[in-house]
Length: 159
Image (cartoon, rainbow, N blue to C red):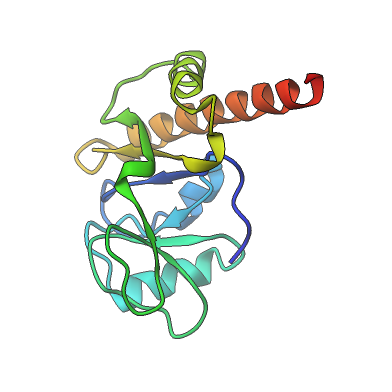
């Protein structure tokens, strides 16, 4: 599994139309790739791994397994998966709230400033919207997170 940046971005839950989201998530710049399914199977997890083998991947709502390697899972882990603790997730996009990237960055910085390595940054509630709207919301999330990473790096070098 690839190393994750500070404030890694991901999607919680499913995405519009279900599976087949790996290439769109790669295009948006999301750090952790998922299939888009509300509940993954071994096959959807394997297909996602094939489409984005060089990126960390996450299973949603299940006990899906990869035959080798490591993967992430929402909630409890089983069978070799690494669990993402919900207490460590900042939900920066909940449904289609079209904040601009600066608003997302300000909200993230307020929460993550003192311990950014602890947090995951997520979007959720996108399964019932259009695919284009979901992709736009994810792009705003990614760009806002990048702004926070740049700010934190600047602060670190100026200290």
